[in-house]
Length: 139
Image (spheres, rainbow, N blue to C red):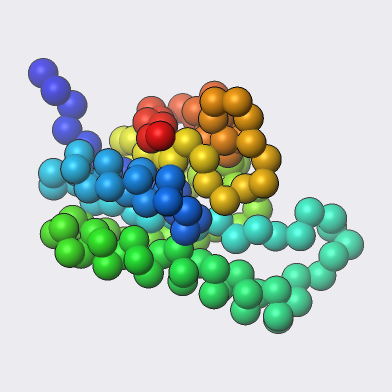
């Protein structure tokens, strides 16, 4: 018997690969709810203050990633909502998936991060190897 999904988490960063992840989620969703998840990049050093300008820029980037995804899902008739988090991208995705009791994470193989590996992006690799929630990586 095939498993039906009720909740699918799709990390979004505005890249073409994250949108391919959303496309896959839309095709697989059926009656499932899709949640687009954007992670704000917070300063790495504890001594760096998160300024109002940094917050404004982060919000613009989030809107740029989430807006097109929301329109695409609505056009396809998929149930879509979004959430945001802040911190280490891979860890935030994993925490959101586990806390929200998602059935599946669908993530693009590479996003907008500068670090690249031979096969998978560093975030998708991190999520794939550390998540307790099943992960589908879309290339």
